[in-house]
Length: 228
Image (cartoon, rainbow, N blue to C red; front, side, top):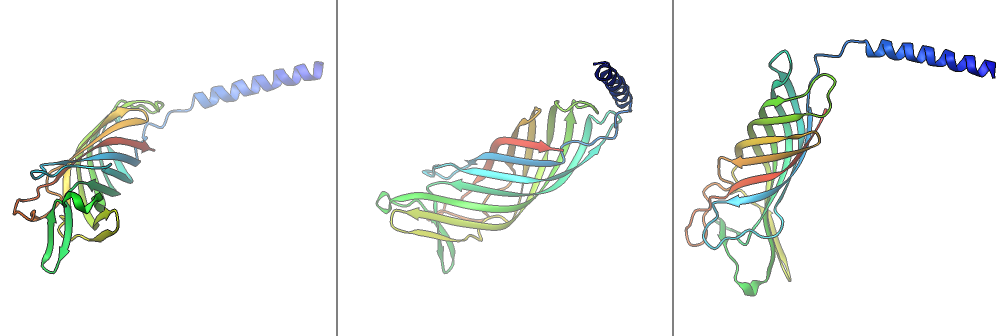
């Protein structure tokens, strides 16, 4: 019992001393924030032509890396620039059809039994952000507000329509290759809201079969998660 008691006192003494020494170490004041991001969104279509409606679940996925560049001594303000990848689907009743002269767009009649119809884009993206956060060197839960822009280059775009008896899919060259828009992210700790508002059209020069311009503008709303 004496040996056990002495051993326990010895352990507690040196553990407490070691813990005190660890706690007395200076905090790393040169910390960085939010290097990696992962997001999921619901994609709205704005400025739709007459009789065009959105259907099914239009979704978006994004992931990437952002270089955090602090702008003040407290590191609450920063500039961020990064590189990422995004996949976005937009479902509607406006079907694209490939012809010898390019592409035409129309709303199928009910007898054609259109089940799903979408345009899907794959983009290499560059987020540019001005960042404010309430973090400190020893705080892992904090408020953040990031505003900026996102530039995107389309590396793949496909139109696909699924009917009851067949499907039609092809690469769509009418999709605007260079896309850009404004971003706004805010939240606390893990869950953060993400907004993206496009400043140019999803299609470039596309028209319906009646000659009406297709000025689809995406609005993406969802959640974004940050990882150090």
